Image (tube, rainbow, N blue to C red; front, side, top):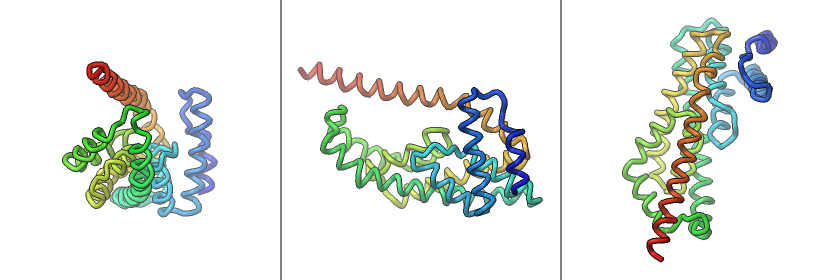
Length: 229
């Protein structure tokens, strides 16, 4: 494994900006050292960290697992399913923590102070109904989307989505996501980093979409307030 670590310098993509390259290189060393020390449990630990709002992208964690823990160990491709299970377990653990933060911390906070952010008790009740009606598919699909997958657990907890359904659909979506990334890393070998290069351009668009939705939400509430006045 130490030999693999020494090769990371050669495969960090050169098309990054210097700051992004430096950050992702540090993350790569951290992930690779974790795998060297912990092997498969390291996948669980890292994927759990990824889902509690810590910037440790699964787009680095799982492809590197497909390379270091499967391809470099001369294991067959079917082990990407094992990687998927470990990745999904980690995501589910981390998501349960984030869900709890939303339910026990975020919900009481918004009920008390939400009006200052244009979030009323009625909005929370609507969110409850929406998550209970459509939350299963929302959670499942969100686990297949960069950026969104990291933060969806918090609103699910705030809306008090059915916890067992939350865990089931989190696991299923995370399993598919983890298997896909691990298989890509397995197939690409030491060029696994190409996955991140391909996926990175989508991150800003998703971020812009989220910001646009927030702006629309604020506009709708301000318009409603003006009409009421």
